[in-house]
Image (cartoon, rainbow, N blue to C red; front, side, top):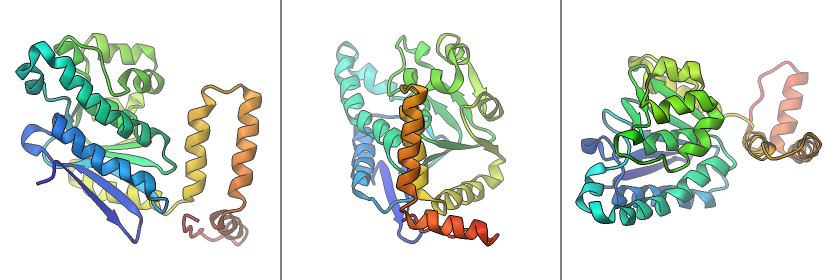
Length: 262
């Protein structure tokens, strides 16, 4: 049985990556990191995708790294850590830079590397019972997998510091209030809400969404003048798409637009 499953809906063009180590609360070990890398990295070649979702089987989205694997090689834990990080870096970078929205659908516990993985996604929807924590202070290590990059940017230094230094655990409502997630939904509606959100994203103007991701990411390092020109370039590029033409005509005719992602 694969530790990570990949499915692609050829009609909606939604790729769903599902963590599948529920007996260990989807804690990351090297085989699971390899399976995640194997599932995600080939998506770079799928230029037809309109949305990527990451989900998990079982009670928890991800309980962080597999600390038992560290304990087995306690004097050489750095070897295990480097194997994990080498496999996860391409996943984190792809989620952050790919040209389609990446949506995390999470439940149960989101801890450690799971927090970093979720933070690299564009949208996050959580069932209301979900708990969010870093927990690196419990093992005497700093965060990895982009946690120190994404969380201060998403939350601001003070709230990120509470997670890092104080070991705070947040409810889904707190995570929504603080900007870590987009929506907290009732558990009995979680699957239907996830499906609705994914369908909404996959039905949108995909190339425009991709340009927005690039603009938002690169804009952090731009001057205003540079960003204004980057926006001009991106907008002009989108005027050549079928979706732009469909959107403009639908707007003029006061009808909902039907986008094809082209």
